[in-house]
Image (cartoon, rainbow, N blue to C red):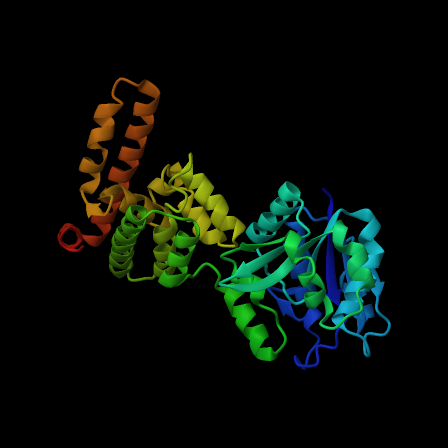
Length: 378
């Protein structure tokens, strides 16, 4: 199934008091972020409907390979009219469209992939995204709806027109708040900018929501909370000993809580990292990826990767057991299986090396006191 992209950027941005398609975040116009959000999921053919200050958008998009079409009556028509103009332009070249306004700029690859895969698999009329009970963008619309939408002239615009397709539609929940984050006002813009720039710094509640979305069992949640406690304590001790914020406490907190988010799957560290990266949490993903098998370059460093690796190897389920006890059973179990045994010993040696490095920096007494705290805490 070929899915095209349809982005409407014809409006006046009247509430923004600025021209929002060309307002920049991360040195890139918002309209380009919106295009990128579709193309990351393989939606290559994108049509952008222009109107107000269209020539300026044309100039910004001249090297992007997008189709551009104008709603010359943008001042007296609605967004639905612009939608129809764009749909008329691309309807014969695709089997479905991913529709979004121009100011929904940071929808993640995970969400768009989720919607596209559902449309490809079940050929629904409409596939909606939803975050915490509220529908957002993009919306995937099948070609079976095109003629009806082009001829619909009732009240309520596109939203009401699509309700007539409800029997063949489906709503998919996503943990991606960006599906709801348009930028109508200056306050909206600053909020979205802040969310995007700080996307790797999640609150504990946000991490818990991600674990719940992924149906992570409670015993794994409890384990992750304990690993977070240990990792943050280690990071704080290292930072204090070095006299500088070498390790990012907020980043390691999120990474620890989410490190086993795909524990039920094979190669769960890699699967978890991919899931988180597709959600835009690239820094967290890079740390989660190495929590089972640490890249050798990190073994001699004290950073977020090595600290999470060690913290995970100090905990069994939700109890502090220490590196020796954590590996004892595995070493015995696989002693006659050379290939597996070699990997177990490699992981064990990495944990011992990092632990030794921590002790040499924070001091033996500090480390022993932390171990007492971890044993006593529930």
